[in-house]
Image 1 (spheres, rainbow over the protein chains, first blue to last red):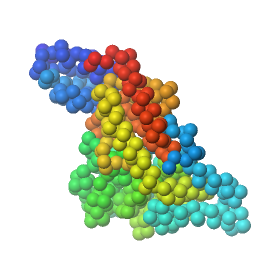
Image 2: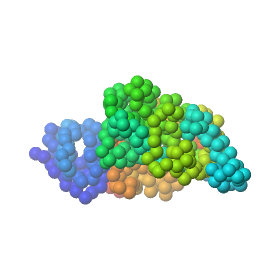
Image 3: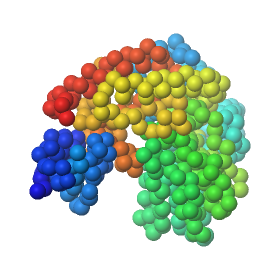
Length: 70
Length: 387
């Protein structure tokens, strides 16, 4: 399963907040897709993953894929 | 030493944007007002007086920067110095090539000139940085090619304070025969001047001089050609003539700052160490940015998870502390700082402090008192307290 969080139109840190709120709704090994059109998300989502020890998988367009690893 | 003049400015913590005017600058300006108002290019008595003041200011700043007076021109800001420095070096090198190498974390003025060069058909190689904001000297050196006609690197980063490996990059540029533009805006008056450069830029506002004075220095023998219509003034580097009164004040400030530089840098650096150590102890989920050791003495930046930078700046202002932020919500373009992006660090919740002679231990203690409850309340407001 993969969870999709549509944060279109919402400025950072809100996309990162949404990710933090919902990452534990998927099982370890599964992914969350954050959809964000805020340019800051391109930096902040990978940085959040680094700080939280989660895995940043990919970014394509407005879709940022994060895998829950713990 | 914190002078009496600026004791009331201790909660002003944005010296990396503009440092409070040094009392020596005020005193010099007062004197110059009577003698420096005429056009220094005129040969009558009043013009010669202005000329003498300007010459003395130029000689003083040149000495502080390790330059010859005829290598130093005044511009209207650090930004114009960077624009003209970059574009002039590229124009002079045009027959040899149209390639520019720059770090990704230069001041936006350098990068704006690089973008203009690119729009006009030139090539720009941008060298990325590590998580502390430092370029790798070997990567930078490897990017110097046969058609590279200019390399740009700052002494130290203006947003996070990290020093760049200038000696090694300068050696590589010299070996490759590529002129090096060094942006010394963040470090002038804070660190010893950089020994190796072909073009150098600085800004008086950053060292306690007045706003409105930039420095563009071009080493004798360096190929550089103005991109503006030819003018005689400022060795043909800045049309319209130098701002004599402001240049006098800028020179007086730099002389005074240089005289006390090492002691003041040590004092401020100890305060930065305290901030770097205590902020993450007092507040969870804070990333203190930049190199902890190889850094400017007066700049410290950090990012707080789940907090909007603009809200943080506003709340700190309300509590009496003036800071700046590289977060997107605090920029007019709504884009995050290119420096933070290049480092790959959190861009939201960002704060930069720039210390100066008027900031005391008590001011830093006061800041450390107000910051944790402000961050906690902003996190509570967005429901992030337990994340």
